[in-house]
Image (tube, rainbow, N blue to C red; front, side):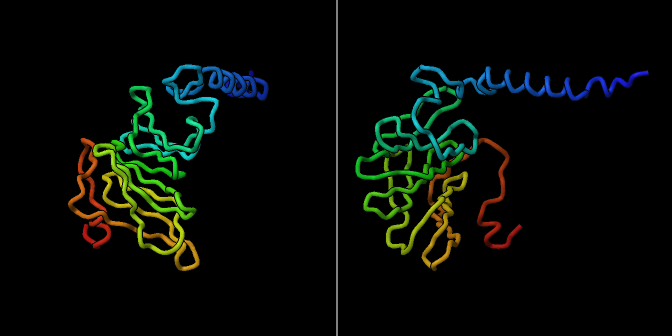
Length: 196
C-alpha cells in the first residue's frame, strides 16, 4: 500500500507546487494592488529608482526616496487611497533628502538632509508644512534617524565620539502627538524613568 504522504510531497510534485506558486505570485504582482506595476500616475512602482522605504505606524502611508522628479526627493504614498500625498516645502532644490522615518499617521516625517555637504536631521510637519533642523549645533555625523510613533522622540546614530553611538532627541511634552485610535501603550518616558 502506498503512503498518501509520499504522494503529496514527492520531489516532482513539490517542485511543481513551488514553481506554480512563484509564477502565480509574480503574475499577480504581490498581494497589494497598489504595488502592482503599471503605467498609471497613481501607482507606486515606476521606472525610476525608489529606495529606503518606511511604513507609518498605522500601515497606511509609505515614505521613500525616489528620483522621479529628476532629483532625489522624499515621497509619501497613501496605500489606502493609492495616490501620492503632496508635501509642500519639503523637497528643496538645495538639499538632498534620505533615510525617511514617519510617525503613526505620517503627520511627522524625520529624515537626513544635506544642503552644505554635511547631513542634518530634519523634521517635517504635514499639518503646518514646515521643516526644522533638529541637529543644529550638534557635532559629528548622523545616520538612520527614526521617529517614535507619536512623533515626540527621534533616535539616530551619531559619530561624534569617533564611533557610531545611539542618541535620542526628546521634542518635549508639548509636542502634539500623532496618535492612532488604539489601546494606550506605555510611553517611552515609562521605560526611560524605570517606571512600570
